[in-house]
Image (cartoon, rainbow, N blue to C red; front, side, top):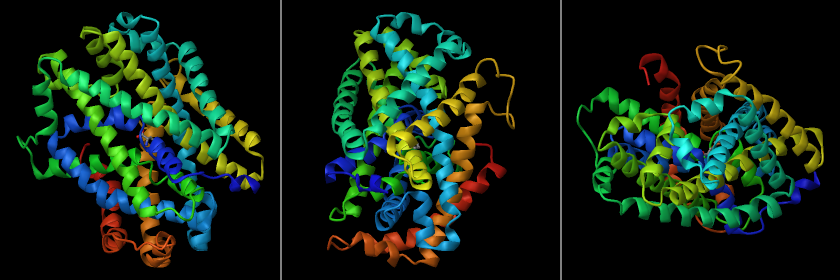
Length: 451
Ligand code: PHE
């Protein structure tokens, strides 16, 4: 177990690495699209309220659970209460499902980055560039494996040298790039209209059902974006130094994550708006927004090749710091379970990722007629992890903390550094009452309304 001695060397290192996990494709691609779909400012407002209440409480719980027990997610739940030991493997399964397809999408990002860097941006504007790329299995496999291997190399170097070292370089670059691109797009003529659409609440046709859908969508986004309910924050918490404040760190990570999501929206919504001549419908392109619509938008811009290249560098960095956290969580589980060395367990995990990821790659090409409950393979993995497993893990975690071991169990850990837990009241109410109810709503909603 000597691997466990490797941990974050500084408070900043922990915050940047955890923020690196949180800031990812979810922020840059998914958040702007959801905000545009669910009434702009209304979504933003609901999202921010949820981050500081619900997201905050869950993140404090997970980081504390990890740091208190010093274990990977499997050991941590068992340590808290033996009867809840089964929850560890359930949470642990989530990164095993997400990492492979996350690396597949990381591979797509690399492909676009290479296309832009090599000056072929114009090629990416054709309508079937993306479709043609993903339906031929060869290239997506190569880019996927390169992305997964890159992730593995960082993980092999360990927590302090690999993950912390990478985060300290990539995260500041990510902030500079995102702010720089946002400033550029906001100064383009016509950006104001898009900005209004994005930031001002649009109550037109806003019904109670729509409000419910918006809340559920915002909550789903929050889980994914803050890397919650899948053992990642438990794992990172186990590497955190005892003298650092969990409460302050959680606030900083949430702030980082939410800011980058909002800035990504400031880039994407106005630029698509300008390109489409004010047609908001174009923002609803779903997965295609980043890979099909945006290249066209960049191509139409002055200096578009540079902006496009900078944008895909930004996305690649964000995706890499997230995939590293996912793989690290898998590695910590395998290391603890089979008592392997870091390099050995990273190799085992990489093999699992490549095999499962290939299923997602093939799901868009030679296996495209094969669907599971009507889902493409990649979408199926996404659905069961986000909509089913994560809410279940979160629900049971709240029950464990709220009613079995009691909030005191977590509060002891948050006050270890001698500071008081300022949001204690909020934390208890959220953990015992609000979060469990929210989780039940998330789990049941798909049965009643079409999302
Ligand atoms: N939080 C990351 C994002 O917003 C995604 C992620 C999900 C990372 C799950 C790790 C685990 O894209």
